[in-house]
Amino acid sequence: MTEVIVATNNKGKFREIQEALKDLPLKLVPLWELPEPIKIVEDGNTYEENALKKAREVAKRTGKLSIADDSGLEVEPLGGAPGIHSAHYAGEGATDRENNRKLLEALRGLPLERRKATFRCFIAAVDPVTGWEKVVQGRCEGLILEEERGNNGFGYDPLFFVPERGKTLAEMSLEEKNSLSHRGRALQTLRDVLKSYLSGRGAAW
Image (tube, rainbow, N blue to C red; front, side, top):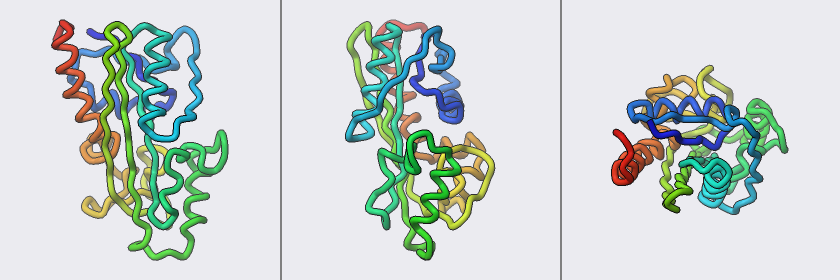
């Protein structure tokens, strides 16, 4: 088993990562299970910068292979907002419900066909032993509904409607969401990247 530190304190995000990588012999460890807390200021100008900063810092502090993601919701009629500020759209420390409420208010009165949005995700992997780094990405297109639907997922999932499935991300099972979401698609690529890299590094598979 190869121990991999997952640079997140978000339990919903960690579950998605566990599900996507479950068939690989990895021991995934989230930040809240580390003996000492690690807090990282996400001050990058892009998702990729933030993901790399988190992965590099955690890898440096733990000495272990680390992965970190940064993702955001880009809403077309809002000029791409909230984007990299998605987690704090309604202010520092805002809850998912507060962020969703602000988004709905910003889109008030717009018909569904004009509420186009894209979820983007970048995941960075960093090995402090070899210096190896890799960044993968994924995206998912959809529409923002006028009210929340579904009890699964987290963040903007209850508002993000995927037309070809006829449901929001929060109405999907974890397996279905991982098959098409921005993070799920990035994780599919990451899975292949990790398998190839660790096999070449001599890890036991």
